[in-house]
Length: 563
Image (tube, rainbow, N blue to C red; front, side, top):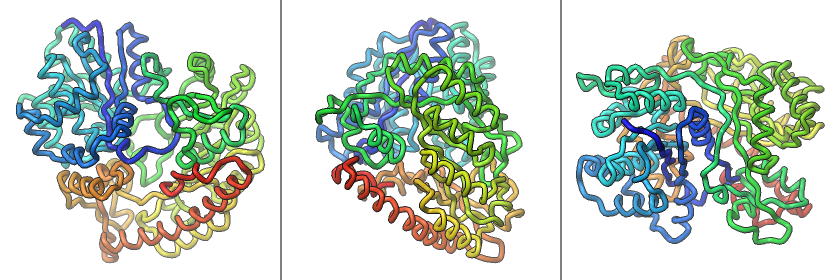
């Protein structure tokens, strides 16, 4: 099969319908796959339909029309040969600037949002392309990679999908996609193709098979070919404080004028890009709630410092920006590594600004000073709880006293420390919650922001595999149609389903001989409300301070209530 030209398209989602907030960033997954394939001599064009969707929604597209994307039967009927004028016209609008006819193969990325509009768009776009151009198609992306972990709940969807289109790739897609392209070029049969890591297919008996995912690779993203104007943020030319606050301190709150994606409308502002970049994957720790506690989870993959520095230098010059969001598991997996990285950034005069995830250990005062000098302005720490007992039971391996010290150092030096908190975990009693709540309250002035998560059992995690160890029973009593209905109701009520992550809220738990799942849910909701109040009060107080200082305006606060 001739495959000399290849097209990669990211599907649109409903996010634009609700007025997406926050900084605009380039699509990292597209950039990584494009970079990997181009390095291997494959001619790739990439297209992101998310900005186009936002543009169309701004021109008066009817919100209610998109309820059709939650209609399973309508979508299945369409891919089985049925007519649907709305689907046809929507795809025509989205693809009007893409010459599908010129490509030998098309890949549709179903991500990065956990979105039914995006998921079913993959099927609908695939069907339209097949009808009009008969191009070989392959599907992948975050949605499909997430869903496959919840077998058998989504098996029907995968089976329907694969009966119409033979190739779905889950997990890291770059190497799997390259191998599939090579196999098709060499006219290899299904027997060989079905050996490719990450491939999902139907076997000769019609049963769904999901091969183990391919290993992660460190790849420099290549965004060439995307319409860069779609990702511009407008920042103040001479406004360091405002820019740092908007880009790092509150990247999802102070959204004006950041999201003015055309020309800056206020004097003194300029367009800039924020580059997402990742140079380590997977985690060496075994937190019981996390999928990384699965003994079969992959080992860490970490780029050499020399590679990171070289790529940062290239990316900064190529896209003319000093702003980066590092998307690593933890930037400081070892003290030696973070020292070498920061020294490399400083010695090479990169003059960049960045944020990342980090651990409290592998950190000291001198390292935080070094990180600040190297451009770090925010660190996100996975604390999960302020209860010593719970921390031990979930195998988190952090020292809460050390965490307080690290947050103090961050504040002194100028790095914003942000926390990830999980409430409602198994064995979390009222005493644990109060201990955690009081810890957070005591340290509130040191905490720049908290993301408060509601615990759900995750397949592969230790809590999921050994529930009896935590005195719980894990169960699921819903179908994927139930989840679809739940998200449709949110959509009808004017709420963005993407924010609720319902696609992965498949499993629930109850305590053996104690609280049932509904009691646990109700208790957790109350804990979340109480904890969130702490953060909400501080956010508004600080926001008003920035208004009084003239760093931001009252009109800039349109997104803060969504945090």
